[in-house]
Image (cartoon, rainbow, N blue to C red; front, side, top):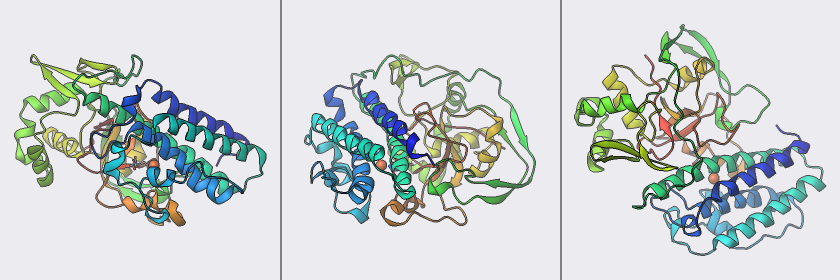
Length: 387
Ligand code: AVJ
Ligand code: FE
């Protein structure tokens, strides 16, 4: 846990980063919601602010005045226990509150928080919730990047976000297999640094002998799968995956466009020639699984990933694992509304490990458990193989 004296910098750095991310947008970009999974950038800025208001200022700062009585209704995401809210599909239908209003709301809440951290002696419970609020905002910074990419990449004009965001660094080393011997290992968070409740409790697992790749699957390898008819071979796919590719006419990763017989890819720097050696991105769990089947290999479990992670480079893509997102033995969810943060999603989702080019600095760690439903692919998701 951070000390009170360290928390102010952490808070200020976090708040500034969200605004920096949005500084490349036009006002109109802040408002739309092209699919249900993507939230308008304006909503992310308001929601992360509401989180501090709801979970820190309202309960703990005496005499705190809400900025506006409607904020909770507009910016609560999914906390059923704290009251009514705008339904998720309606986030993009709100032209009000305006973007300018949201920035005023941010400033008001940031000031109140700064004041609170600087002028009062805060107990551990409060410091902990402020720290969670910062990590929460960092999760939304990743969502800001991916939601902005979706908004721009599904616009027929393919506008670029900026000229700097590097989403396709090359892995400049040969592919090798890392061998891990069978045995008992411990997994789960094991330090006094911050972690989410879903990374606890630490526990022993038995793993059989396995090998895991030091390198993520590249675009070039995935093109071989496509050209070999991977999307047409029913034997490679789960039943619900086969229904999904057929009903949605999926035949390539998200953001790939075949133009004059050559693959192009929409990136945050705009539409570009696909880079064959770049790590594959924007595939669903279904596609990750089918690709592994086609190779005669498999995805690692999250336990295998965690035990081996110090032996390979990671952090470019969220890596689909074969593991279902379920509680660890001894998992205790947080009391009160914060118990809705991670625990209530432990059904029908897959765990992803690593972190991506859009993950905020120092946000992820070897024990971090990300999770998404199997067909989702608007995050920077990729494949690391095992056998
Ligand atoms: C862990 C990325 C699945 O997007 O719902 C944001 C992150 N939790 N606000 C999500 C999150 C609360 C979460 N994921
Ligand atoms: Fe959230």
